[in-house]
Image (cartoon, rainbow, N blue to C red; front, side):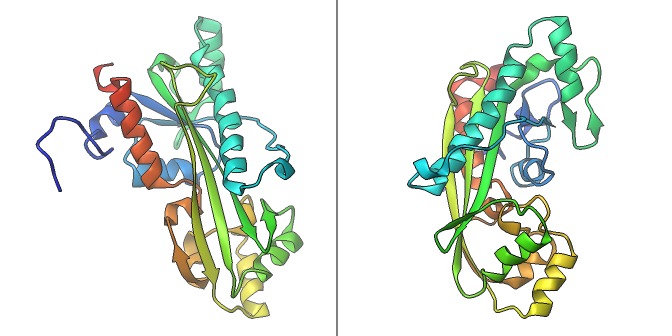
Length: 254
């Protein structure tokens, strides 16, 4: 139900804040093309840059009872490394170095881009949990084949952890940190089906060899939860978190 209040509850209502180039910019701490695309196409953030974190993603999984917590902690480490680089760039030299590391979906940022306009840094981490095992990015085609062949007939749990840092709070602690879970069941597949998926190379760089975009979706029998979470970023939860941050820190007044 719509309300008459001035408070904005959705990123649709905040669209100008994240599309006017003179206002708030967001950095996705990821070199994956899919997560920035979700921010742009599903959430409506066009003031968007990307930057790799360099985090090794080597946290000890044995210390976690829940795969979602592992993903959220990994996302926090990714985001913190990028947020520190951005939020502490206070002189000409460090800002020039930062610009060389940032890029947008079309290439490098302009030399005169004001990095102080970057107010939010987001990172995410996705993995697949099935049959009591963690499935991350496959090391090669054989590893991808092993992963995909184990999917038909059973639900896979796809976890994506998210961490969001805001400039006003600094890089020590995230303003938002959470994970989302989507359950997916594949259809029965023949050897030919599996080989066709492998031949398309959609498994490359994807946790659990999952690439549900393109024709990977055609092998899905059932899905419970967020589609974008499987792609790599839960749009609904991220959108809500960004709205809360914008309201709390009065980003619309920047």
